[in-house]
Image (cartoon, rainbow, N blue to C red; front, side):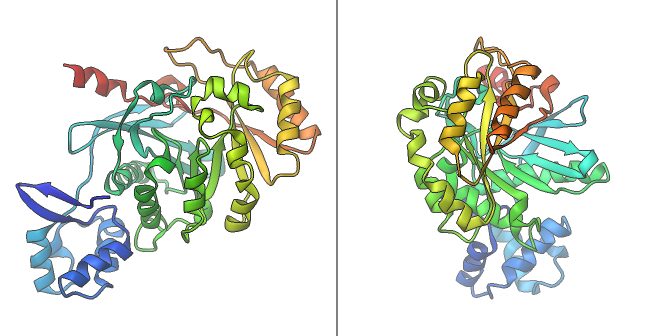
Length: 361
């Protein structure tokens, strides 16, 4: 994982999106104290100050050094699409000219202001109901690029008079395949001198990669976990999620109890409702049998159509019947209210299509 970036043919120290522990090590290399890292982070994230000369609690010599040897890189906001439901989809242009999307999801009734972050450009797993997978995998994002999304969207939220309350890694890509950068980003999100959110305000979603879940448990980051399940058996899951050939249901189910003991919060199982595919009462029964006694809650997600496939969303009556069956059999189940469908910003719809046409010219 590289955290030096090239600019004007010089190797400069990137300060943005780097956690205090790693930044402190860099300051030690130049003969400074580690605590200078937290001072710099406070200027960047709390005071929004990018001019080193204005970081007045730093020694003058250090300010001069930073001015000559460090950079603060933030992606360019290329486009913002605003939804009728007040959510917004952001298209960010990165330093190499590539693009990534992320989403702001407000819940004004409950005063929740959630940002859905991307960890990769594209995705290699090609889940049949997800637009991002149709892009294929382009590359991982750096923690600088991940935090850049959050920083810019937080500015948007605060202009509207609100505060950032939650962060979910549910955007483009698979967070567990870029876990080092995701961990660094989470450290910045949680830090008092970063974004100052609590562990329970951050959620990492995965298709169910066991080694990623185990690695996350070896950190001090007790974030919430969501697993994209979408089927009650391996045969169906493999059909709609090819990753199941490598990571079957049995590979991650045993880790649920362990993760809950680690983070002290139930694991969420995401279940996209596809008409005539995975929404029958028989499949609801299979789901009950699979998850019986586990500390999980099921999040039923109405499918958001994409152009590349013929799936249709389950109707409201079917979803409610499915939920009722789960609840009647002691499985906690909620129905997610989709946001941003009119701007293709809902779950499974992120693809940066504005990018693709621009890059092809």
